[in-house]
Length: 174
View 1 (cartoon, one colour):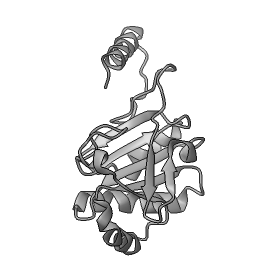
View 2: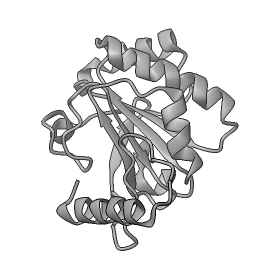
View 3: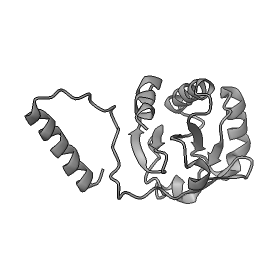
View 4: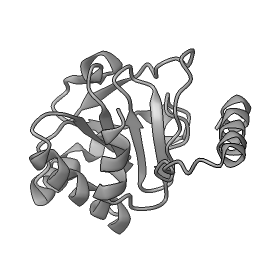
């Protein structure tokens, strides 16, 4: 979180405390983007070689899960997303980014079938596998990110499974 965001968040907490008004707390990991914050520009190639880009997901809130095929927490996170995607009726985008080398594509395809994933699956590139991609270090498994309709990161959770109610609380405000 940037120092500007921390300062703004701290000011909001102090202002709420001073006003005596009880305000609902945002979900853990939620960060309201400032109006001048830029969207994240990215291009990830899916397992069928079609690009998943910042432009293809813009216009709807997007939940992105970054995980390996071998982690239990990543599998649990994806199970939540599979169920959410089935019930969201197209209101949100969902993307799984496999933190696997491209030569593991067949393994990722089997993982897709095993979990019943119906949304796009991207393969991490070398930069992302080193923690240097457009979303920063996403190697802590799982990493779950939510982008708002303009493509700005509004939620980030790492190394924990984010349950559907927490994800829906964040998505509901977008």
